[in-house]
Image (cartoon, rainbow, N blue to C red; front, side, top):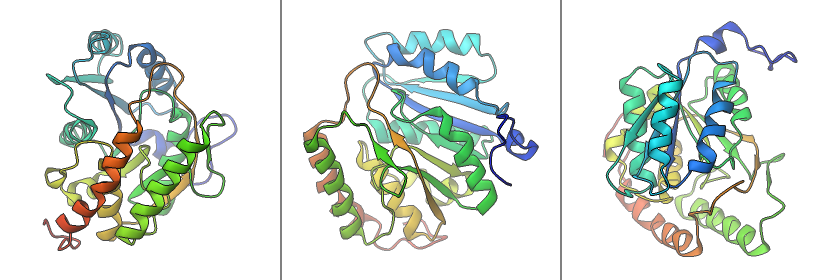
Length: 262
């Protein structure tokens, strides 16, 4: 497929791909409009955006509806009644995207910690290699973290990844990455109905199942930027709880094999 041309124009087969970006939101009104603009500025005419909002008290859901009207046919909004958790929000959005024919599904945050500019590159890598999962990784050569991260936050993130990798015995370097591009068949065969994780441990469970079921995973380096506006939902208690639930994931999926369900 080659690399992205210097002009920014993508090869025809890249442009033809039906890509749906799924973004869960809770109090992201200050970020959503700019994120939407940057996504639709990408040279991917078949890119769609699906926002899953958990009844944000700051009006994110209403803003998402306005944007969906502005970007008719390219954007949809799913409104949930309460704060149901990151994992279930992704499952809900991914299932809708698959039902509507997405060939590739991108999961990412609304706060610009994941730059939309990486999406074309991730798609190109998937098309060129046939990989099932492309991970925007902080922990492969070339990847980096925001310089504003404290030493404590860096160490906690490093430990969570090392702990998860060791316990689950897999090779993925960035186990807690929230920026991924999935092929349709991988999500269908994983069986989103079997995913039980409700919080940030969702990222670990999906990475574990992808490798356990034999899918080809490629990690591409990204710069992880700290959120531009608003407050992070990823505090220390959430990370500790996620780490403890790794044992649960290992036990729950101990019998999974490729082509099987549970």
